[in-house]
Every structure is written in structure tokens, then in C-alpha cells.
Amino acid sequence: MESHRSDVPLLSEPPAEKNGGLPKRVWEESKKLWEVVGPAMFMRLVLYSMNVISQAFVGHLGDRELAAYSMANTVISGLSFGFLLGMASALETLCGQAYGAKQHHMLGVYMQRSWLILLGFAVLLAPTYIFSGQLLVALGQPAELSRDAGLVSMYLLPVHFTFAIILPLNKFLQCQLKNWVTLVTTVAGLPVHVAATWLLVRYLELGVVGAAMAINISWALITGLQLAYAIGGGCPETWKGFSSLAFVDLKDFVKLSAASGVMMCLEIWYYRVLVFLTGYMKNAELAVDALSICMSLAAWELMIHLGFLAGTGVRVANELGASNGKGARFATIVSTTTSFMICLFSSSLALIFHDKLAIMFTTSEALINAVDSLSVLLALTILLNGIQPVLCGVAVGSGWQALVAYVNIGSYYLIGVPLGVLLAWGFHYGVLGIWVGMIGGTTVQTLILAYITLRCDWNEEALKASSRMQRWSSSK
Image 1: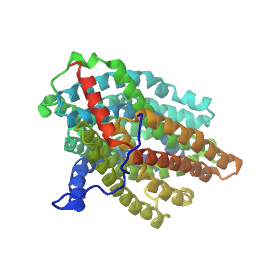
Image 2 (image 1 turned 90 degrees about the vertical axis):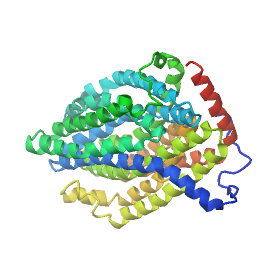
Image 3 (image 1 turned 180 degrees about the vertical axis):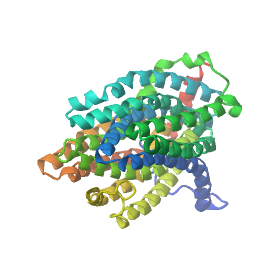
């Protein structure tokens, strides 16, 4: 992104239209935004609810089981999921801009290219599941916790490859406003997940292994249903069958996907590092359990704002693809304001119910009190979640992934992590210190992204989008 300066500030009021003025424009943009945000948000809430359900079942088995499951699902599976999700987000840029430019046939080609690349990287990442127990021990985690987490990771390997299929599929459907498909299939998978988890964990008494197996079953079902719709005739304009064009220009596609992967995985890994560092503390099981519960609650609420990330990415990409820079800017304003208002409400709930946050996960009084002591930081994290994902959505829609990757490295890993380590061990604040440091990194990242967005020249970005579409579709 060569220039982000604009003669017209982002937050200046756009010219009012003759019929209805600004309120009408806000209403019309909100309808377009929520057409994507609503289904995307609900889908993410349902998917994450599956994770919370599994965690709740495991939490009632015991503290050690919960710690092992959290380490495997949050750290090992979370790391690979973050990278694959980031790589798939390249489709939000390309498919969104192609759809806005009316080049519908390219969406199916882009998805096939993404499948090839993500499956290749899934194979490369598979050893992190297979050797996760040894890896955790080598990194200094407790031996018993590492062994149990390694066993769970092995059983999570099938869902790892499922991610490589379903993530591009989600972006493909989302960018053509077929979010209801992902919503319906996800809702259909929820009762199956509950039943499978109860059967395998409680009835057959397979413990944490049963919880991992239930996740595989649920994700496989959801993926199969979406795949059947997409290639079975539900998308006649955008799916023209498997094509040899999927193998064309893979080098350039890998570059954008890799930049997207680095951007997103640095984001998702950041708070996984928080859980990982907590494993080095005294009374590690209690610390990991308390923090993983807080992270689960924060991530659960974050699903709302990831819906705004998706919606903002699609709306910005669509407007830029249609050469409408002012429309992209206005979509950014509406999305950011709406998301922030929601996070204010959610943050207030975390403060009001501070002493009841962990009840659904455990009956341990010590663990409930430990989560209670972290409630203020949880509320602050939720507050930041209302702005930062939307700004990332702007980056995805505009194709700024490489720039944001550098911002994430500096904010998270040169500021947030070192500050957290210093407060935790240097000043002996423990888990509180780690989390405060991480929040500091997120704050810096949010401020930088806000500055970049405010200074963006949207007309220039529209020209770049037009040039990109001409270049990528020239191989057809």
C-alpha cells in the first residue's frame, strides 16, 4: 500500500443525499452490512459454542483434563487454525472485489486455488499435531500435562484437514452473499455436536479423547453440507466445475495467501501465547484453567465482532471492486461505530456478572475465584474487540494484509509479549501481568490500524482494486 493519505478525512461527514440525507445513507449501508454480518456472526457464535460445549463437558471431568484439552485445542489446534484461516482470508479480498466487479466466474477458480494451497500447508503443519506432546515438553511445559495434551492433539488431526476445505468454502459463499447456507449448515451441526459429545464423553466415558472425536464429527458434517450445496448446483454463476485454471498463477496467489496467513495467525496466536506462557507459572493447572475460561468467554464474544470483520471485508471489497472509494470509506465508518456500541454493552455485562463467569465451566471454588479476579481485564479485552476486528476487516477488503502483518509483529511480539513477561516475572504480577502486557500490545495495534485507516486514500485503493482484478482475470 503505497499511500494512505486522503484529502478528505475518514470521519468527516459524507455529503448528504437529496432524499433522506445522512440517516438514510446509514440505514441503507447498515442493511447491506448486516446482510453479511448477521449470518456470519451467528454462524461464528454457533461454531464457537461447540468449542465451549466441549470445554464445559471436559471441565467437569477434572482440572487436569480441562488444562490438557485447553492446551491442545487452544494452543496446538488454534495455531494451525489461525494460519489456515488467515490464508483463506485472501479470498475475501479477491472474491469480494471480483464479485463487486461482476467477474462472478472467478470466484470458483479462486476457491480451488485456495484449496490447493491450504491443503498443502495443512500437510506441512500436521507434524505439530503428531509431535505436540514432545514439543510441549521441549518448551518446558509440565510432563503430564504435555502428554495428555499431545494425545488430544492427535485426535484433532482430522479436523485440521477439514479446516483447509471449509475455510475457503466459507469465504466463497460469504462473498456472494450466500451466508444463509453457512448459517443453516452450522445450526444443523450444533445438536449433532451436543449429542456426539455427550455420547462419547459421558456415556462411553472416553474423556478428553471423546471430546476431540466429537469435534471431528461435527465439522465433517458441516463441511459436507456446505460442499454439497456449493458444487451441487447451488452456485451456478460462480461455480463452473473443477478447472485447470486453479493451477494458474499459483505463485502470486501463494504470496497473497501467505501474507494473509501471517497477518491473521499473528493475531490469533497472540492470545494463545498468553495461555502457553501461563503454563510456566506455579500452580500451572489452575492458572491455565482460569485463563482459558476467560479466553473462551472473550473469544465467544469476539465471534460477534468477527462477523463485523467478515461484513466489513466484503462491503469494502465490493465497493472497491465497483470503483467506489467513497462507498468503501462510508462502510468502514458505519461498521466501526456499530461494532463498538455492541462491545460497550458486552463489556458492561462482564463487569456486572464478574463473580459468575466461570460457573458454566466448573464447580471448583478456587477456579471460580481465579476467574473473578481476572474479570476487569476480560471486560477491557472485550472493549478492544469491538474496534480492532473491524479495522482488520478493512485491511482484508483492501488487500493490506502484508502491511498489517508487520504491524502485528511490532505491536504484539515486540511490545505486548515482552511487556507481559516483564510484568509477570519481573514485577511478580503473574497472570495479571501477562494479560496486561498483551492488552497493551493490542492497544498499540488498534491505534496504528486506526491511523492507517484514517489516512487512507480510498480513490487510490479503488484504482488498485481495478488493476488487481484485470491482472488476476487475464489468465482466464
